[in-house]
Amino acid sequence: MDGLNDPVATFEKMQELLKAKDDTSRFVGLALLKTVLDNGQLINDPQRLRILWDALSPKFLDRLLRAHQNEKVSRTDSKDMVDLAVAVLHTFSILLPEEARREKRLTGRTAPLVKALIQSPPDTTKLILQTILTIAAPRNPKWLEPLIMMLRKLVTSKPTAAGRTAYTQLAAALLQSYPATCPSLLFQHDASGNSDSKPFSYLMVNLLLIDIRSSFPSLLAKLNSEEYPAISQRLAAAFDVISSFIGFLVRSLDDESVSRFSMTPDLLLKLRKDIAETMSLNIEYLRDRWDASIAGASGLHPSARTGTAATSEGTRLTLTWESMKDNVNADALILAGIGALAIWIREDENENLRNETAGLMDMFVDLYKLSSQGTLDFRYPILLALEGIMINEEGIDGFLGQDGWLVVFEDLKSILRSTTEQPTISQSSIDAGRGLQIVRVLLAIIDHEATSFPREDWMAVVTTTTSMKVTATPPSSVIIEFLVAMLQLSSTLLSKSSGGMTKRYVTSVPALSGLVKQLKPIVSNMDDEVESRELMALLDDEALVLENLR
Image: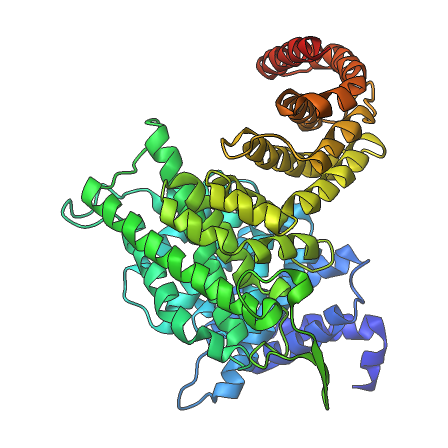
């Protein structure tokens, strides 16, 4: 084996072992290949990488992925077999050129990978899902529909707990990767089935809702247990699937052209009731989880919160039931739970649920601030939730009471800097989209009947808008729309302000009118004629409003 220190000898030995007829030699070759791949020795050698890939037996890989404990194979050995096959496939899915990733030699491993999900621990499950998603990089792969049919069959076959976890996480991963095509494939009704049977989408969503509701009562007590990360991952995936379903349901009800989706009114009403009940429990858990980690009690202003205590394990919060390993702002379940709640309260006119959600305002504001520091970005779902909450006066009071206006305004200023001073197409467009969400939330507050006059500190929006720099060629249409929205926000503040405040800020009107004139030629040259006409109409309205303020 000393010769294996020579890269050429190692390469030849791997080829020999992988092409052998017996599985023992193949397994040794695969283990050696994993070591070489992990060391990065083949990253810059695509020719040898392809030779070794072609030497691998697809049937052998499939047998390893199917390995399970029996009289001849121990649990540890079966796990090692699956882990080895998954690790090698994951690496090849990344390193192989695109044309090779499209070949059946790799795409044909998708089904065995899915089946391996059922018995795999969290770490292996994550790697399997990453591998499937990497293989899925062709836009509309031919295997997507058969894979979803397999997933639907698994859902209806009354699987074990491991099976339920597998189909939940796979469904969430596919919906995230193929948001345009996957929802209809997964949620559409199969007319070929029994006409008396309930639609598949109803069955699947109902199973996910039951899983969430049954898990919440004991979940807080498991924060420090080894099983919490896996439970959190599963429930987060369930919420992601439910979010996708709600979006699909709304589009289906609004657009008759959405094909092959049908659900009787009585099932829709029952599903609405079940989702509302689940969201109420979701709010309770979010409240308890936040109080356990940060707040101490519902609605406390940050200045009134408890301090920390020095322990043998370092400085800890004085609340003892918080997770010792996972920060609340890094918990995927919190992000997914807020996302699903935000979509639901925006679409469903349930005033009680919106008021319940308003009780999470301190958490929303803090998570918004923490998003720039943590691994997860909560800003988008929180802004979506605020759109639903701001319909009620209680929501507005809670938002302002927690300094929410100041927090999102600081973000708004940073977005203006990123979109006008140093714009890059990708990030600036993302930021501008978030800016539009912020403007919608602030306009909802200003326009609400409970708001008599704007506060003095709100008028900083006007002076910030007057300082905007409009480049001759903005990178994207969403940035143009954001700049127009900033003008709308400013003119609305000026229009609703009291006489004395209006006089103090009347000097801003010429600058705002100048921005309207700068934006008009840019808008008129937009590629999308429909969008150009709509934005031009808005600019004409702004010009008229500003003229009346002079």
